[in-house]
Image (cartoon, rainbow, N blue to C red; front, side):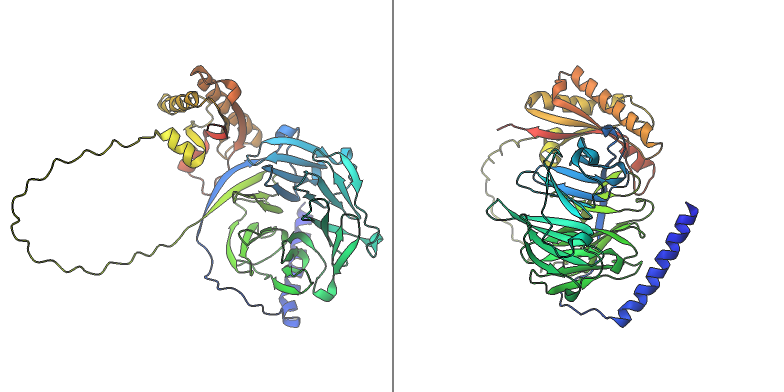
Length: 479
């Protein structure tokens, strides 16, 4: 293992020297950009992590994270364990698709058809179509692609047509460096390549009405094209500073927010750019990630990151606005008032009493959560001082019988994953048992154990906040 890392360091140094010289020989074109006001100030919030261990084995090194916003699910390409793992947005394991059961050998990328949930899986020389649950259906016809026998597919993107029957498949190839566009019948629509400025790799394709974007990891660049093949934007800097690349491995584009997320293995960072390639912020480092490889963002703005720890970590980023308060102009003092005549004021009309909502109802409305409870280190005992919070939760649940909740257990970052997963599970079950004793139907509650929660700045206060059970309202059918 030591020899491997020494070779990797030598390889990285060679590439670094090469790409320091390369821009001087082949300068990039300068593209016009929208006004850029500089990097953003952010507050990073770690939400939770999950490792898929309830599937029978933990996740290994996940190569791709695919978000299905329609169904609230994430697909994880767990190549080391030769499977695709499906979880919900809360990290709860749903099912897995084993490569051997789906006629797959060595997938390089996955894509979804949002209309029916079919899964398209790219391998170096083919694209297979699976059903929603992973049953093999057929292969996409690639026979009309030039040099079909030399294909080395790295990524795919499916764009359904307006009629809802067919679609367009964008295929990113390595080696020759091609972007191939076909319909689902196999007819070739267009092909981009070296003539349009594509290098050696076309990875993590994004497509909208006006743009085609992807990353070329070995050239340290992100490229954005029009559908006519014209290069609109190219950016990427070999650097360890904000916005710089060292060994980029994955790309995710949030088209609605016009944000571009890049995960860099060597810097162990998630780097976020605006649509024109200006760096907005980044987060990570060896204290948080171990060789991160894939990134994705769901419709709630939650950022999913996979590294070689086998844990998918989920973050929320809050932009901190700098509010400038201007001093009001001085107010001239009025002349001294004259003695007013004595006037008997009418009896004031009392205001109606305010509608007071209890703290549980407020929390449900604002965060879809109930009051959390916290535990001592290594303990599953519910402290007497915190039973009041659980009593309030039970009272609210009994008043709202159509609501179901996830009872979510956590532990702090100290100790092994196995120990903390069991500990967080026992904490959640202890809380659920207490609520049942207060009249809450057990069928309305589902225990979810997340294990240890990684803390960015570990201290006694933040570790104590991790030793908790909280409640997420997952169903609310009240009129």
